[in-house]
Image (tube, rainbow, N blue to C red; front, side, top):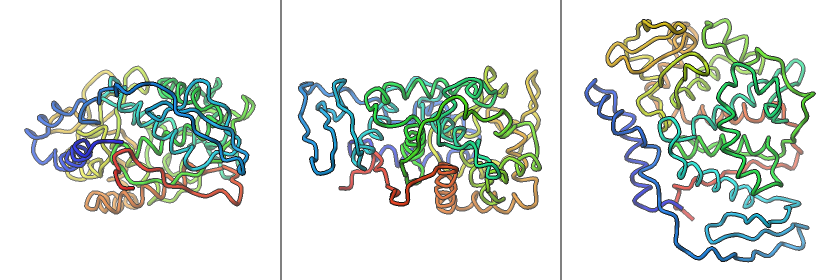
Length: 363
């Protein structure tokens, strides 16, 4: 669990991120100091003895049993869990969060954004007309889906999660990827997103065709065609777009380059604020058409981002989220929950759980 000092640092950093672009000087200073601000610094590994602690199984529940190390991570000799509980999923969540803390050498200091992208792209293939696609299946493990242009770079996220999968062979890839998306949002200071397990892994025959994910070069009609196919409305399209507060584009993946905000590893409503308050111009370069901010020329927006302030139905929601971070968090949590559950045949008895963030020190 995070220390009190680390928790304070996280909250302070989140507040700083929301106000960092008031002038160009603070923008530059914040960006320079924030290349690794996902956490306040890597915690040293405990010197505690690695002796294993035996954890007994609940016989009535028919569970297997696990052995846990002093840090709470399952050992390689763990046996299969037959009926995993909320506590079992919380342990997996904690392992993902711990790896996010330890492996801070990716992009702007966190694998968080690419984990969210993995969960998003695994879910965003859903087609309500045919009932195909969605997070049930984890079919991105196979070609050609894993090789679709929209999924370029996501091997890094899948590889990041492999040690967690090996330590917890009972969890499906489908559930693991979505749990990682939830962990990424919450550990990057975003809202609480309820989580419900029950996804099953499928074989290559369930791979979805290319073209089901958004094309960043397109306009509002394209966005509506993509998201309406999944069952989303205009307000939900704008709310989901707020995920672009996190991460960055890469020329060797999408062809685009740069971050959307000055705080690419902390989730705030800055994406909307920048869209509304900043001046944007076409970037002069040899790559695909994208926008850059006039003030620092260090940020980017895609054509599909700019339609949120150009389309008369999208713009009011963009302006609302720019003014109200709490409203954005509420709507973002709701729409991400919907996205992550598209096409999943949950059993009626399956509950939604709240996974506790590592920075939450309440009991």
